[in-house]
Image (cartoon, rainbow, N blue to C red; front, side, top):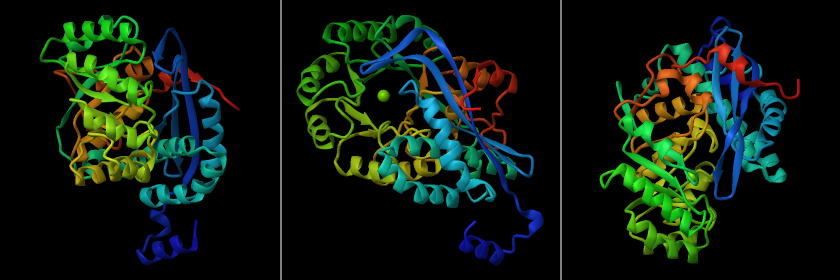
Length: 393
Ligand SMILES: [Mg+2]
C-alpha cells in the first residue's frame, strides 16, 4: 500500500473494522481437448481453455474474472505465472473495493516490463482477468449487479449474434441459434475464394434475406486481396467485414473502408484506450470490438466505449471464451451506451454452457443481464473440478 493511499483512506475515515484486504489472487485454468478443432484463417484451436481468476479476501468474499487465452496453445502456462508472479504481489493486502485505483496501479507498475518483454497483450490480458474479478467483488460487497452499480438499464436483454461459423459445415451451428431467435451470424472467411463463397451462400440461404450476415477474415488478407473479395462479400449483403487485414495497418484499413459498400469492424487485437484512440483517429473502422478479457478489463473497456460513443462510433463486445467473461460483457453492455450486439460463440463449449447454464442460453435472440450481486454468476465448484488443469503446483 502506498503512503498516498493510506493518507486518502484516513481522510475519508475508513476504520480498521471496515477494511477489507485481498488475501489471494489465483488463476484457475479450465480446459478440454476438442474432437473437432476450431479453425480460423491463421491457425486452429485443438483445445478450449478458460483462464479464470479468483480473488479472495479476508471478508470471506471472492470475486471471479477471466483472462483471454485462445492463442497460442501454451498461453495457459504463461498466464498462470504472469498472474501469480507478476500481478498478485501488487494486489495482496490491498482493499479490493478501490477497483479503478488498483487497475491504474497495475497498469503503471507493469507497463515497463510489458514493453521490455514485448508482451503488452499478455500483460493486458492478465490485468483484464483481475479487473473483472475486482468488479465482481465490489458488486457482491455492495449487493448490486454490476450494471446497476454503474447506473445501467434494468431488466435489459442484450441482442446477440452467433459467431465462430466455418470453414467446416456451418448449418449445424446456425440451426440451434436460429431456433433461439438469433437472426445475425458471423462467418469466418479467408480460406480461399471457393470455400468462402460456398459458406457465404450456405449461411445466407439458411438465415434468409432479412438475416444479418457478418464476416471475419481474422487479418488474413492484404489490401489488394480484401478489395478483390469485397465484391463477393457485397453480393451476399455483408453487414460488416471484421479484421480484413493485419490489425495494425490502420491507414490501409481506412483506405479499404472508403472503398467498400459495407462496414469495417475491428478491435479484438487492439489494447487499451491508447490503441483504440489510434484506431478511431485513423478512421479505420465503423464499429469497435473491444474484448474485456484482453484489452484491460471492464474498467478500461468502459472508457474505450465512451471514447467511441463521443465520436459516434458504436461498439460490439468481442467475446469467445467461457461463461464468466460472457456474463461480464453483458453487464458492460447494459451499462454503457453505444452497444450494437453481443457476440455469442455458436460452437458447443461446456466452459460456457455448463458453467453459465440458462444465463448463457439465448431466448428470442437475446441474453438476459443477470440480476444477482456482482456478475450474478458464481461458478459451480463441481464444474470447475471437472475441467480444471493443474499448472505449476
Ligand atoms: Mg474476430
